[in-house]
Amino acid sequence: MRATRYTGRTVSEDMERHVTLEYWIDDGWYVGRVKEMAGVFSQGATLAELEDNIADAYGAIASDSFDPVPANEIHRKQLVLRS
Image (tube, rainbow, N blue to C red; front, side, top):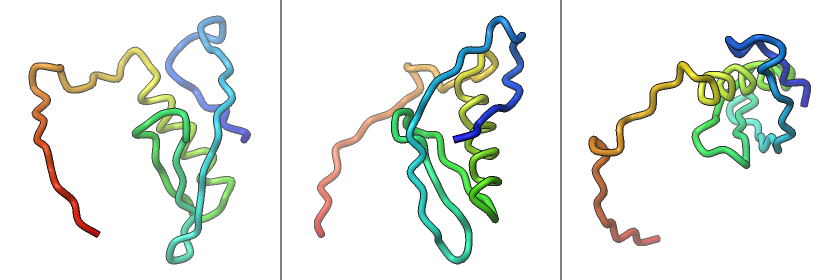
């Protein structure tokens, strides 16, 4: 994976992390996710574009500027799913 994008940090702060890109083709689009990090999904017209978009998505989540939902605002509910 050639995921090398600007993450908002200086070069000395950037770390290289090797991850697994899982991808498939859906309606002509390359769609993928980072196996090791839930929530990092994207798509692209080409595999190279998907890799760039995944890098951007990973950078947004991994950066200090990412502001997840505060734990006290997350609601949970048990569901029963039938197949």
